[in-house]
Image: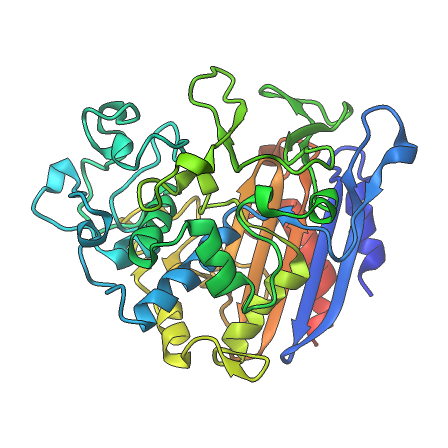
Length: 420
């Protein structure tokens, strides 16, 4: 079993991590789950550290995008969303890139990062601000049009943008009439056996108590591998917050604030739920997403989604040809519909050297966390990992054979043997 090699990651004095959760699927069955380290680190008393267990949930960052895409595709199956439709038809206002004002931004563009939308200095804002505050010249967060690429037309090139999923979350609300967090719980998460969610204020005290704090060994912009772990997000002290948390645009340090849901009108701005990265789940819960694709859309003998819908999500919507977008330093060379398509190009998007088939899924990187949901529907294999923090500048701990971090390569290497 890979326990010993994974344990070395937590003990590395120069490149430590505080916590780790992993799960492995081989031939359609979960064959291994591991939980190491601490979900909470007491600043002065190690005896009060709280360990990670299999039920511990983490804010899994951009893997959230793939789960949101499942929500969009449920509405596509129901005939409520047309992937080729102009998103303006659903949002209730005209969303156009000013440089390409006659070209619609379509739903599939948002799912494949080909929308020509960009993040600007932020991509999540609290209510009562609305989505239009990003895109209207009169909006507070217009930033001189920073949320639009003036050079690339919608559908032409891919450039990763978190704001795409914020728009999709709002679109879900417009179509379903439900709040984004509630829709995702009822239509996606609970049917898949996932008890986490996007809104921690809906968690029970027990769930909050088993929520992992994310850490870095960084103060401001300065990293110190020999220094203390510094909490980044989800440090609630076991207390359920009164509402969803988002960054406060009125504070220069971007401190977090509570959003008052009592005055929120669904369909105006779901970005504060962090559709792009705010899902709190465990590795074993994420394994259910991989199993969904492996089992042709069936969960517990019941059809959750049509197999052809899932197959469509895996098909290439964009593939790097050397000049048609941003491949993220070789990490992302192809996109499906909400799905990261790994081409296994050596030295770039290659999680496992010599693996015979491409991987699909999504990666995550935020607030110190690194996460991955990698699945091979044909071989019915999957690797899921959640690293709860970074003890050094990731730029100084790059992978040796891929475009990813050395932490991730060590995890992949430790788990690879379980696939055979």
